[in-house]
Each structure stands twice: as C-alpha cells, then as structure tokens.
Amino acid sequence: MPARPRRRRSLWRRACPVPPGELCAFLGEARSSTNVSDFTREVRQRYTDQLRHLPAYRAGDGSRPLPLLFVNALHDAAAREAALLSVIPDDVPEALWRQRTGLLPILVDAALASHPAAVATLRDIAAGDATMNSSEVSELVLNRLQHSAASSAPKAGAAFGYLIDHAEATSHVSQLCAVLRKSTTATVQLQPDQHNRMVALRLRLVRSTNKATVQSGYILWRLLVQRLIDSLPEPEHLARALADSPGAHLLTSVLEFALCCVRSSDWADRDPSSLATALEAVITTTAARTSPRHSYGTVTRPGRKATPYQEGLTRPALIAVQSRLTPLPTTPALRRAAARRGLGLLWNAGYDISDQAGLIDFTKCMRKLAPLVRRFPDKATAVDLLLDVAARLHADQRKPTRWRERSTGEWFGAVVTTVRGASDSDRRRLVTGLLRTDGDMAGGAIRACVDHLSPPPPWLANL
Image 1 (tube, rainbow, N blue to C red):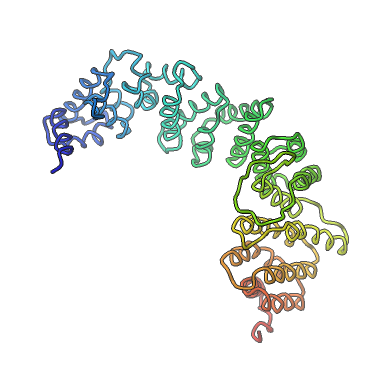
Image 2: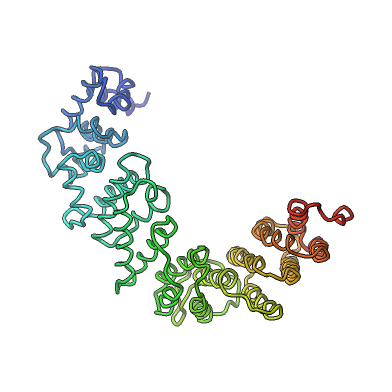
C-alpha cells in the first residue's frame, strides 16, 4: 500500500482513539445540540485542543499539520450553529480569524453562527477594510458567503446581507449577482429592507460617472428586474444610455438589459420610438458585415460603437421592439409595409448561416420576429408573412436541420394564432404552401387545425 495513505490514517488515529471511519459520525451527530454521545464530546474536545495550536503552517513537503486538518474538516463538513461553536476555544486570538493558517476558512460559518469575534471580522471584510482584503482573503470569504447565500439554509438571508454590505462598500457586485443568477433566495428568504438596499445600490451605481461602475449597475438592475425586485426603466432611459457613447463593456450590459425589458409585459403600453432610434443608430455605426465572422467579442475598432457580439444583441433587441411594442399602422397596406421592414431587419443583416456565429445571431432574430405575426389583426396578411418566412428559410437551407426545427417551434404560437383567426381558404392556403417549403412548420399548422378547430377542416383528410 502506498506510504501516503498509511500516514494519513496514522494522523487520524492520533486525533481520536477510535477507527478513522467512525470519526465521520461527528459530521452528522455534532450538528445537533441534543442527545450528544460521549464519542461526540470526545471528538469535539479533540477539535478544541487542536484549534488552540493555530496558526499552523504546512511542512516543507507540503503536508498540513493536524490543526489545519481539523479546520479543513470543519469547513468541508459545513458544521454550523451550536456544533461549530462548541469546538471553538473561548480564548481564540482575534488575529486568527484573519489568517488563512488560522480560522479564516471557517470565518463565514462561525459568523453566521453568531460568534462575536467572527461577526466583527466578517463585518470588517464586508466593509472593504483594506488591511484584510487581499485577493486571497476576499476570494475565500466571498465565495463562502456566496455558497451560503445561494443555499436553502436558514442563514442564507444573513449571508446575502453580508454580500450586500460588501457591494455597498466597494461597488463590486459580482458575488451578489452570482447569487441572484442561480438562487431564489432573493425572492423567498430576503427581507424587504434587503430588497430596498439593493435597489438603492443599483440607483447609485447607475448614476456613477465611472463607466465600469455604471456597467455593474446595469447588470444588477437586469437581475433585480428578473427577480421581480426592481422596476423597469422607461425606454427613453435606455435610449439615452445608448446615445451617451458608452464603452464596449457598458454597451453590452445596456443591450442585455434592453432585451430583458422588451420581453416584459410591463412595457406593453410604453412608447418605444426613442429606444428603436437609438438601437438603429448602434447598428448603423457598426461596420458592415462583409465576410462571415469567425469569432465573437472582437476588440472594438476605432470609430466603431459595437463589436460583432454587441451587434448580435442590438439587432434582436430592435427586432423585438418592432415586433412587440411598436404600434401597428391602421390600414392593411401600411401594416404589410411595416411587416416587410421588420423582416428586412433580418433578411438584410448579412448573416452567413454556414458560419456558426452567423447562425446563432440569425436564429436569435428569427425568434424575435414571431410576435409581429401574432399581432396582425388581418390574418390573410399573417398567412402571407408566414409563407414568406418559410420560403426564405427554405431558400437559405433546403435540408431539414436542427436549427430549422427549433426555429419552427418558436413560431408555433404565431401559427396557432393565425390558424384560429384566418378564413378556411386562408388556412388551406397556409397549410398547402408550407407543405411545399417547410415540413416542420406545416406540421405545426396541421396540428393547430386539429387541436384548435372544431371540427377540423375536412380538406385535411385529402392532403
């Protein structure tokens, strides 16, 4: 047997007079403050004794001494509350909470368990104390806070509060945003005052004169809107942000937020004209696409306002504004012209669907066009638009592909709305036309006729 495993077992035998496998019982039983066995009391005492020998340093061969093994065991076991506090010595020097070779690995758990010295130290770190905010310390502490805040533990809200403290003190919101992206903590466990603090923080960041800080503000704002914590801005606000010559990174954040806002029903009655104009200006100032793209996120060139990646956000946002929010003209002829202009934003973009990057942007824009067809009151025109889209897709890609199938799925709602409102002759024209160009979309139209019309049209049986 290799020498290292034998050495590890001997360390555990020195730590506790029972087989090493039984030491794991501590991880379960020691979480409770009741029904503690003699074995658990012995293990807790061993922990206390070893923690008194901190700080401890790795040996020359890189191995960790027993005190650090015990600290790491507490960290990995996520022992909390009474179980954790029971093994921390009463006379721990305050400096140990600040040292990686001391109690720093369990600082967050101890603070969430209300250990006074740990709470004081964590508050200093969260407040941006320069003496304790080396990159190593910040990464360790903030990552642990993020882990706790994103969990379903009772103290998740308290951990999130420390992250808010840190964001307020430093204007760095990456850890705060990471929790908002992956957890429902913010809408389930947080208190209203924490919501209010994040909204106030967002407001301060967005009003900053530092573009990097403003970028953080828009990232936070988008996540707060998605979590139903904050309200949406007016379209004019985002139009001004796009017109103020933002840098490349800030422009990306504003565009991502614009896409989020356009999808919200809260903007259904807003005037989008100023935002549409600003988005058109961003597209206009982007260099014309003269060849297939080979990469995303290229460096912004002098005189350009957007990278290919950002243009890939701008065009879908503009199409979404036109499809969802822009009022339709009052006459069929004008509505048809408006639809042509909306479709032209996609057909004239110059996307090369043989290139993966171009295909991604093309399909994003395709998805954003579907609501335009759903909104048309005159379904004969809607049928014409669906047939035009299917014919164009067929011309660009004659063979069935996965992306064609996915695009068809995005348009199924528009197909259903059109089938339900169209005349019987227009329904037949739609189905027969789609059968010639797009089998997937034709299948959706036939399914809509069967599922949403009673009785189904008799001509279906003769197709």
